[in-house]
Image 1 (cartoon, rainbow, N blue to C red):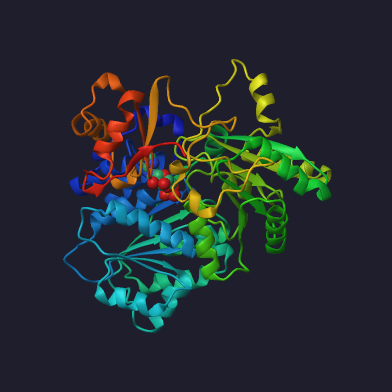
Image 2: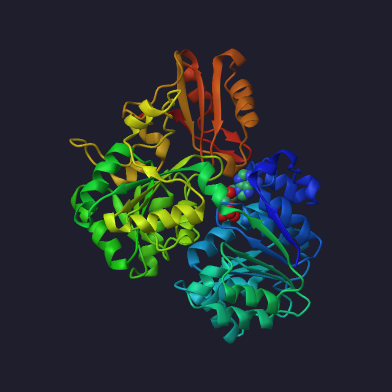
Length: 516
Ligand code: AMP
């Protein structure tokens, strides 16, 4: 078993996606999505998988692991065959949906059908989708078993098998079922296994079902140390909720996830925060699937800024705009700590992780610090942090999202009014309306990278569509789902008039001044 340890600092020698051997259809999709360079796990795993090797990826969500297995898998598939050629097993339906969406975006220029099958949704419509033809099935374990037993899913041609977040499947008690499913796939299959940790049962599974795998390891402590600033708050158990409210008011997260150890604890905290006027929802295993989906959609869409969750419920989620992870209950292992805080500070953003400890939990915090190889300092309010930083850190401007916490005396925003973050008006860290550069006006555009927009496209639209000079454009920023541009205030209105409702890259765009 060869073992390649990859660290973020090797970035200087990063190869391009084209150099990794991907075909032009995939390169076009990658370019449209806006990925510039492969992430470390992609750089290692993509060539190995394209060579037909089995791969163990020791990496957690946020490292780009979905593309690491998804891109070579898509290249390998034969669109002309209507059999299921690839199966991806995921521990939760949330991850299943997320992986499906991501793979579909990579397959934009390929004639490949990707079908998601998961529990809690009508099986009939999933059966119909499978009948209509699926090259790739992304699935949760229980639903796969069900579909196989109903003969709606046949895996005899599934030569590409991915086990995503294998350690989570183990924790949830699915591992024997996973083995049964693997055994239904052809013996000449190619298998990729991704897992944040490698507990003994997962190692055994790899030894039994994989052929001479290459191991690609991404050191998790790099992720936490580099991208997430970490603090702790010592607090007596009874004062935790009050302290949390103070902290949220001071930190003003755009979006925060607060982790609780138990389902009961999570619903109690949700109730307490609601009683204090906060816009918060809970995600835990006692809720029905429908409710969980509703919560996920509300949180992902930015309509709910605060989420209280248990570890299992929040597994594997890739949630944009999460600025803060709050360990309301200290995690019970350093691995869980790394996993929880890996949900913020994604893809170049900075995030903050704050852990509550009771006085008698201080030794547990020291263990986490040591094992995760990180430093967790006593929490200071943002103002104090700025004063202590040398040179003083500039306050980051908030892009398009209101503070998650409602200051006293302010009215809670109606849920619907947050549906389009920028349309409600941005604010800076002092809670004032967002200002563009002097003499410029900031405009919101309801499309971003996910619609294939690039800065060049917007520059072209501003120059050709709105007939602006270069000197009248002061900033262009493309985010995942929407974009901002800054133009001279005296041409802002005409820019909106000329571009609002026009078409750009096959999509209608809406343009408006980024203020309420
Ligand atoms: P994952 O680890 O697969 O959950 O991916 C985490 C996030 O990183 C997803 O939102 C991806 O769209 C994004 N991502 C994946 N690969 C890259 C890349 N090479 N450059 C920038 N973002 C990426």
